[in-house]
Length: 276
Ligand SMILES: C[S@@+](CC[C@H](N)C(=O)[O-])C[C@H]1O[C@@H](n2cnc3c(N)ncnc32)[C@H](O)[C@@H]1O
Image 1 (spheres, rainbow, N blue to C red):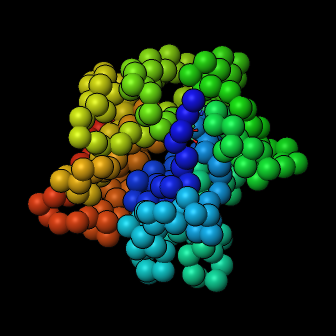
Image 2: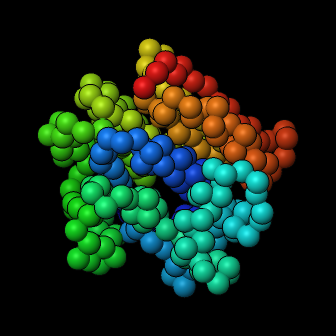
């Protein structure tokens, strides 16, 4: 039985980092003339409110979205991301944080659809209620490790896939690696994989598999001495070809806002982008 609930972490620095890049990638595909489908393999509840005791338990958003929400930035990519978060906080006071399903929904064109997988029964119910009667959003209370690949294979259009698990199973890094290997065999895929940087560096299982792949790998370590979440990483396979050029400076700006100190924090960006 899963116990992870994303409400405890909504709006933290790792969410900001992940959702900033998600917005960039979905906008990139929106600007292409071809249709695409977004698949969120680990959707969570969709929308989080600070009135929820889960979200207020550790107030992780205080070292995340609230550090930047009302600041002025000259960076268009950061402003595109913040514009979405501000739609859910019209009074400028931070009240709500949209998860990846709601962020994607804001960027959806009329003829596009999104597919959401959420296994936790409580979060699935909230997600379902959040998108009640929304024909553009398909929600599955299914295990994405077992059901995603068949869905991807049944579609011939461009696909953007987010794998954002809770890594609460002992063999979950291995499961993600296996899923990544299956997915990259499928045509017209851009795959985004999120991982946490924790004490045991288990994420190296994922990053060591990238050598021969067209990818970007971005890692943001906020506090390398933190006993819990030190930072997080994103692996993007078949990224938009301009990704590094476009958002390297934006990432540096976000990093400056979240870092604890020069000694304990680090932003790294590697890529092997060929073309897409
Ligand atoms: C980190 S949270 C997702 C956050 C969300 N993607 C966002 O950015 O707002 C991970 C979610 O994946 C769900 N989950 C875990 N294993 C899953 C699986 N095998 N299939 C589908 N959902 C799963 C968990 O219940 C949890 O809600």
